[in-house]
Image 1 (cartoon, rainbow, N blue to C red):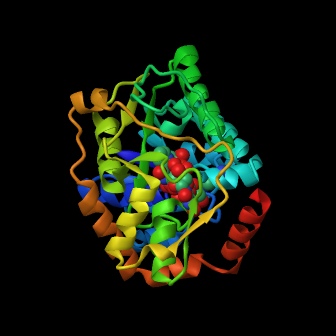
Image 2: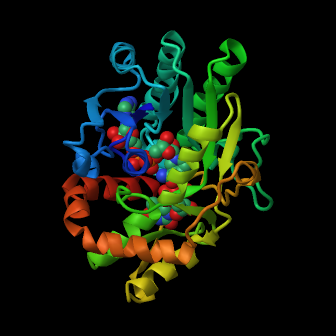
Length: 336
Ligand code: NAD
Ligand code: TYD
């Protein structure tokens, strides 16, 4: 099978490419990525030289680049991991989110239709369903996004379903809970807090939002879910990908402190994120009935992740540069 993966230089895409090339010796992958601040060729360095793998630097919102790449590669499947993904950045500067997450998704759908690609998988998030104090979202739940990030993802996701209803384009939509694991850019809570603690810095916990809950899945379990959907999913269907492992931010922070032998004085309460969603939670029975289940326990996966960041200091230190510091300072100043 030939698989066209967008955003394969990011966190989840790079893990997925490594996963499917490892599992299927006969598969070929084209990684199409714009290399934004979050895209990093170091994440796929070990794949360079593998004859089954190629990389193209390109923007999913660039119609010509997308069509040329798909026409030449002739993929059996397109999997769209590419996105602007960080909620705080979307609050700070929403524009890129609209171009990539909405127009980029539309541009891929058009190419899939024109070149009769047999399968299109949209990688999306539980955040499009919005926040709920209790219960879980099913695949039938309606969208109620809060941030410019989730609103942009929802726009792209609606377009995906419109291409099924209108043109019978062979799409599948997936919505996952929060991922964590190796190669996550150090801006999301787990990767930021682990690396801050390792650097001897404080961890910025959003005050007022410290009891907010997230459901967490280890990225390898997400890779196995997408692999399963690629082979057994049905066109026109939506699948939620959830672990059932929910934890409040404050409890997650304390666990990380324990794993890294740091004290609670490391926590610094900072101004809360505007529009901060209290809780996301997914009913993923539909995918479980199709034969998938997560393998990792949250505790083991979190410990494994901490070890990975300890062993890959050079990888994340390079990313936490002066611009990174400037962005964080500016963001917190703006919120005060
Ligand atoms: P990431 O930010 O680590 O990586 C995104 C990748 O997309 C980067 O390599 C970047 O260079 C690339 N990209 C951005 N704009 C592009 C464009 N216009 N054209 C081509 N490439 C572009 O993201 P991630 O955490 O790996 O998330 C991957 C996908 O999974 C996203 O669609 C995201 O919405 C979704 N998702 C993420 C999570 C999570 O917890 N991280 C949870 C659910 C769903
Ligand atoms: P994040 O990792 O940004 O994922 P998302 O907002 O997409 O779920 O945030 C997870 C939770 O952690 C969220 O409730 C906000 C909180 N958080 C902090 O308290 N401090 C931080 O510095 C970050 C990045 C997040």
